[in-house]
Length: 86
Length: 373
Ligand code: SF4
Ligand code: SF4
Image 1 (cartoon, rainbow over the protein chains, first blue to last red):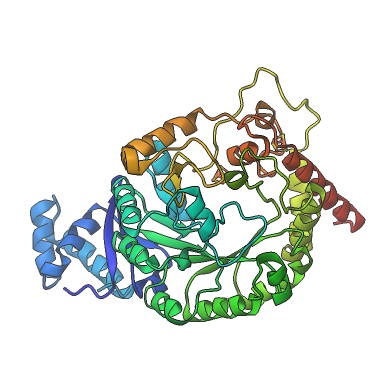
Image 2 (cartoon, helix red, strand yellow):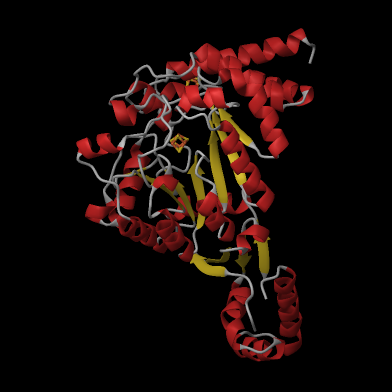
């Protein structure tokens, strides 16, 4: 998947944040905070083609059903899309 | 799974984490002592000649980036680039770009006069999180008197361009005998530009240049500082808000005796030295730029050791015991830096500040009762 907005991932004392750079600063007015699952998915985004592939990896890593995982993933990708990040 | 978070929430959150865990969440980098203005109340400005004569040197871009990298590895998220006038550095964008690549949220303190042409173009492509622009007056004549450069209209135009492009701008206004006549005009212009203004009538004695503090400088008397503080409140607050402010002030006044001789003074209450640090232009780490000590030298001892020293020494600082028991302590603006700049000691009461707040409260209440607010 293609990350459109320039953001830099940082880990600070157990928190994961995305700091916008370049033109991405204009529409963020702040930063983005990721929870653990969000950070896990974020790291794989450049290597995966879509939600299904993400789901396979999430189910392999976490104790969660494919259906539950898919709901969360779709919501996450939807939010990233709305924020213009992917 | 993802949350957009804006200031001040994330700033407060990370600073409280930083304080608890001893992380330098914010770093302030005084990139240069040089400035193209010459303001009488400035505590840092040195000319090129003064710098050469002092035997001290500005840090190189490489040194700044090295310190920033170490601070980032220790948890720094926020970096303030300040001066002097930081945009005077020929290698400014090398430092700025390098810090941006580290994933730092950068704010820039500037007088706004150089935010045009190629510099502006570069910022529009890659803006900082925020510009804090210092305003010195509300017309060219006042600018000339205060900073030796008649550039108010130019600065105003530069602010407008940034705002129109969608860049975050906030204004800082220091009120002095040179520009106190311009308050109304500045307020109106800021409203028209739709930019917030942080006004202060309190000027530090310039201890970092002149030595031990307590020297007269070009600041307002405590009574005049109070007068202009209230004048600004009248401009920016509705009658209702002003009356609320007077009521809150009244709650601070107590008939109880102010201090117990046994009571210990409080420690540093702000973020200085617990989740933020200041680097002077010549490489000294301080808890805050308005203190002269405790100091540490990251280029000599390494960032981690310098930060540890600053944290430990800051934790030992005690403010006056009288302030700990004073009802005004949350509204008078007292802090460790103010005490030491005014008196030469962290634990001595800054009388100028006491006089200013008493007069501010008196005029505020007088105004309310005259108008039955
Ligand atoms: S500086 Fe003066 S007014 Fe402020 S807390 Fe201390 S004693 Fe009270
Ligand atoms: S000036 Fe005072 S309140 Fe501000 S950072 Fe320094 S010590 Fe803290």
